[in-house]
Image (cartoon, rainbow, N blue to C red):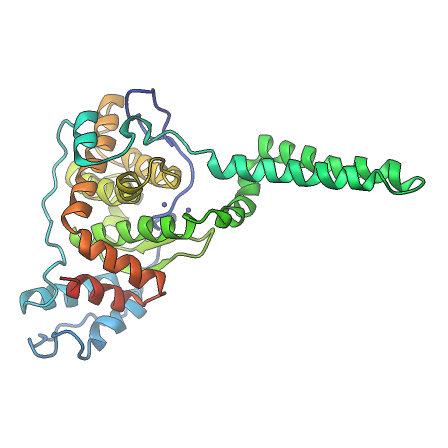
Length: 330
């Protein structure tokens, strides 16, 4: 739910797969929901006091209202991090810059990880093989037919994985939780999407760290119209590319291998395909590199905030509590 083919020396153009970051399908906003217009005083915007207006807008999934309230909070000096990085512009980026910034194994960032798939497959084959050997010790016909029946499970799994691998995704995702770093990876990955979106001025209306349902839910009515009409301009594409690559950048700064990049690269490809003018393959490749670099820079410059947000999201904090964690981390 947040792939690109690539050579061993370059980040490639992304290709379709699944996703983390949430605009997977059109969201219909309730245009009858009231948008708050009252000014919020500095006292009411102070940490630890009532932020009911913002909480209500988030609960109603009203992105316009969320932006209005956060803009007001920013004006009175509380939401200082909100939209604090509004200007982004893609430039030519090299792999050396990614490495210099601290991205580990930058040349392999967009190569799909098979760690979880391989572990799942080996476990299925090993377990069924062991059970088949035990079943072979049973007397009579049971000892003859049962091992074949158990052994066929591995063949079925292999067949499904070859024909329709998506059907196994839920099982693989659940199995992946056995890795000690998996839950921490999810939190770090999704917190990166959340934080970069907030810094770039994109409203967050929800998130999930549940295995198989990991996502950060961003809804912006104006951007939705541009995306679904295929009219994204370069400025908006750059912003969305940074948010889409933030999870990959967060993992690349911390781990030797990135596990959760496939869905993010699918999302980036989706945005690229709905932009005007269309980018060439080289331009798409450079956009991918630059977006990783820019997102990684934001995360490094806001490391304390990122860590605070990871803790908040790991504790299943509400969106409002996550925003408070961002604004009060320093």
